[in-house]
Length: 382
Image (cartoon, rainbow, N blue to C red; front, top):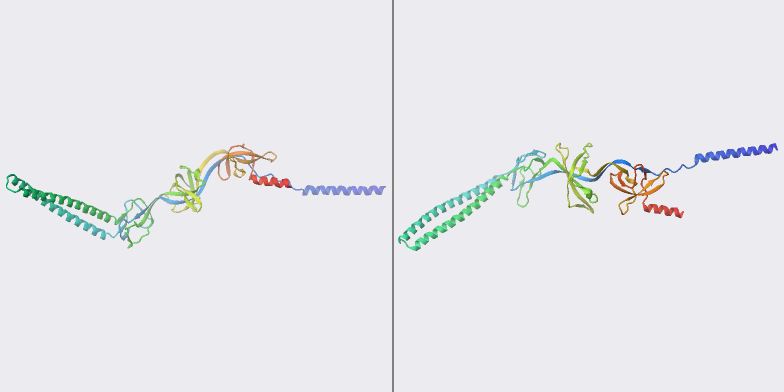
């Protein structure tokens, strides 16, 4: 009997030890509880909404200076990159042909003037002869036809004077034109600016018969215009007067700011894409910006301080009324759908106008309606 009890006691101890070992193994190897779903908190924050687009820097004022007469370039008085003032001499063309034309025109004017003077003398003589014939006719000392002939001769000379006066005026106009052409051989600056293009050389012949040849290009680099290509999807958010900012690749973090001046109504197309040019200006008196630089522009389309916000990735599908479905997590992390009206967004946060309260948690990256339906169908089939 004692041996029997001893065997059962041993067996019970072994069973108890096995049960304890199994319990210990179960507690140490059981799967951990599933982690809570990723969530964000509805909180107060600042939101600045911007439209980003690529831009190109250009001088606000840029003038191509050309030659209005043909000729050979005699002297270049400026160099590329030189600052010039309005009226300053830029280029001299060979003036010899223009001077010869002026001399010929002056000779023609002098000749026409001499002819006009001779006609006036003849007219005065014809006028005196007419008066003499009229006196003789009154005393019946001459025939009537002689008086008529004197009157006719005077009329012809007066007509010749009018014609010669018109010829002299035409020749004088041609002389003035030749003098202007002579002045065009001295090309002066039409504005204050910098020489940014000088495509000609001394000795080169320029011909201005059909197209005005470009001698050089002046640009006012004190003010830079930023030409920003805004995509069609974003242009309606842009308004004149909005703040626009950019920094250059080599600007060491310096930000330049201006105000939108104009939105060009005619678009540009690049393949199937449509862009609208938005222009604004920035100060460049320190000459830190150069033409044709490419920059990334941020145009501020709206801003709000300490508004109710949530992570933008919490937004679900958008309904026909413009509201978004958001999954709100309760105290037990259960998902409750909520319709939310939103406002401005900055790429990370979105302003909540209606549907949520501060402190509530929302599910990040909620599944779409199609994904939710697929998951439900899969669960039902299993």
